[in-house]
Length: 609
Image 1 (cartoon, rainbow, N blue to C red):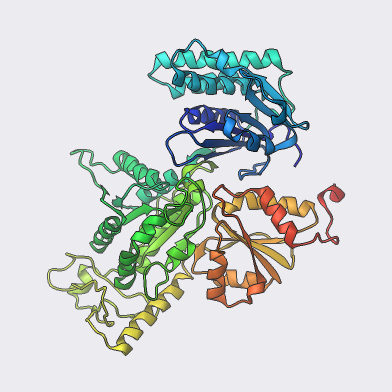
Image 2 (cartoon, rainbow, N blue to C red):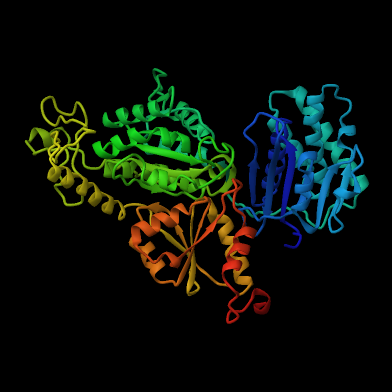
């Protein structure tokens, strides 16, 4: 990878966790955004309170690439523990900005990288408190980057004022540290560097938002009124976001009373229990959790599936198993969610890839849960949920009305319409239900987690049991016609293709460009839901080889595809990334190249130009 240029570069800030670097790094990312430049920001931090390495990557791409590229053009190397690793990740011809307060040993350097040393600690010596010095050192390197990368200082100082609004005593020292770093860089180096920022109007009305915040807002718009949760990284901010938005949008104006309930319970099992009870009573209810929470919820998820209660679960996936790495990302819960609970179960999964889809799929999840009367999982991950993404503003149809599914109301029951809770009247596997209190004497039913027949009566008769679970399978087939359709995102007519989902999407799009430049053109399909649609099966059938890209060790999506579609295993080739960091375009290009020799019949990008 060659070093970037104007409005096309990647910066990595390498720090020690617990030194207050996050606010400085966010300041840097927002400055590029305020200059009208598309950005992607990735905060990769450890799960301990302080002491371990933490990294913050900012990608500026006028071309619109918002996934991780892989290599860096400039590293701000502030952590001695990770210094060698950080320097190793820099492109040939790239740059390393470091604190030269202490001399840097020559063995730590690379001949093909330019080292830019500034005495950041010396710049902030007037602060006697060591912790304050560390904080100000971070602001000082943002100032130095402003000179090196031609970031508008007025924009940065304005952001400092906004960050410390109402705390005037903090603004002055932060601006002073910012200016010290800026002036030092101007005096020491030829500024700006070849990699630099120039103002553009390249983002339009796009916003910066996390996937968790987008999903939380989507729950409010969907009409959710009950959330039950137990704190767990990386889903906590979703529940907190829902409460924040409810306090803004779900308060009775006259009385000031809440029109919502957010319950922080004693564990994940209690959380899903509250959600099931609320949903049985007719509320739109959800929980937000991660892999360990899904494991604990297993028995109650099976109850909701078998008793046919519409609940929504947001699984913000992290690295497992067990406690795993709580602050690292994976797509490792695919099978755990698809087949959650014991016995024969199959659950609807939605795979958002952007904050916009987190917002939209939240609404879709509640509609599907009620229409299908079943649990629905929204399968986000830490990268999407907790990182800040550049997103189109969310659109909303004011004519939207919640799809409550097959609910018999008072008039139908009063007119004597026959009601049997688990009877398939329409042939789609979905029975009718009533909400408690709808009618004083008709429509009551038991939500049985034990064996029951189509009338809702207890049974252990094998034929009646089998008839009921076969109907649940028919309902799952109906779900395949209702979930968000897969999207063909590249279709050059190749005999080989890639199939991917979730946060693999952005780096995969860039990787497809890189592969095409090397003479390898691939068809591409982005999966958005399980059960899989006919379109997904047809896409796989049409290709000799399909690379299945996923961020887990055991090829869970490939396993699910083979279980559902029956293709020859050699047709689906796994490309796996599971170290906990978000996947990069460089990794995808290199790994696919290793599997497939260049097609010399296709022109390369250089030949075409």
